[in-house]
Length: 153
Length: 153
DNA sequence: AATGTTTATGCAGATTTTTACATAATATTA
DNA sequence: TAATATTATGTAAAAATCTGCATAAACATT
Image 1 (cartoon, helix red, strand yellow):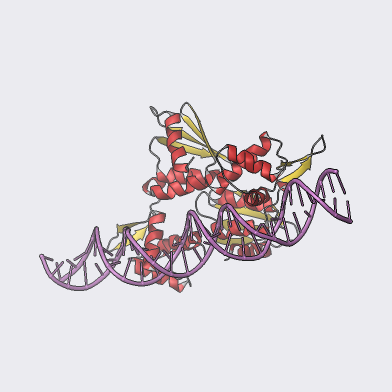
Image 2 (cartoon, each protein chain N blue to C red):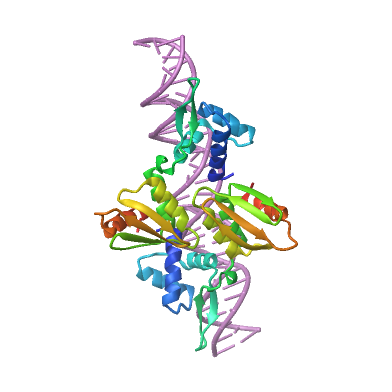
C-alpha cells in the first residue's frame, strides 16, 4: 500500500464519515486493514491540505476544501514535485515554459495550481510541456528563475 | 539533479551528438557537470528504451525510437508507476477505469501506452481518471484484475 | 489556570531507491 | 578464434523516503 493509496483512502473516509480526530481516522483505516499511526495520518492530512471545520452540533470534523485555492501544497512538497519532474525551464515575456518527461506535465501543473505560486495566474499542461502565465507586472524570466530554483536546476 | 533530469539530458545528448558508446555518453554528461558512471547510463538507456542503430559509415550510435510503440517500458518500471499512482481500479464491459491522485492520470496512461499492455488497445486520461479500452474478446474485468495486481491493490 | 485531549514534530530505525564498483556477458575487431 | 572493446548486472554502499515512538506544542474543557 503506497502512500498515495493510503491518502486516497483518507480522502474517501473524510467524505464518508464525520472524522472528529486523527485517532478516529486511524481507527477507520484500521477497519479497512490499513495500519498507520496518528503521526502518519497527521502528515497525511497535512499533505492533503485537510482542515478541521466546525459543524452544527459544536464538534469539528476534518475536511478537504473543495476549492483548490483553499488547499495548500506545503512548499516542501512543491519543491519535491518540481525537483523530480521538471527537466527544463524557459521563458518568454509573461510566460514560463516547463518541460517534463512524457505524460508528467499535469502532475507538475496540478502541484503548481494547488501551491498557489506567487506571481502565477494560471497554468495549462499538455503531455510533456506546461505553461505558467505570469501575473501582470511580473516578468516571466523572474518567475522562471524562481521555479528553476525550486526544481534544483 | 534527479534521475529524470539526468535522463532528459541523455535524450538531448543523443539527439545532438552521435553517441557511439556509453563511456562517450558519460563524457558528454561530464562536460555538463553531471557525473555518472557507465553502469548508470546503461540503466538510463534501458529506462529510455534507447537502441543502438547502424549509421552510414559503419559505426553505430544510440537513438531513441520516435514511435512510442517501439519503446518498451520494462514490466518492472510499469509496476512501479502503477503501484505508486493508481488508487482504484474498476471496470465495465470492455472498459477499465483507473483513478489516481489529482493531475496524475497522464503519467499512468503514458506508462501503460509505452508498456503496451496485452489486451489493451488504448487509453485516455483526464486529470485524476483514465480509461483503458480492452481489446475485443477481452473482458474489462479481467484486464482490471491484471492491472490491480500490478498496482498492488 | 489546571487538566485533559488532540495535533505536530525531532529523531531514529526501517524501507526503498539510486548508484558505483567489480565483473560477467556480449559484441566487435583483428 | 583470440584479443579487445562494450554493455549488462549482482552486490553493497549511499542517499532519500517513510514511519513509528516519544514528546512537545497547541487546543479545549472544566
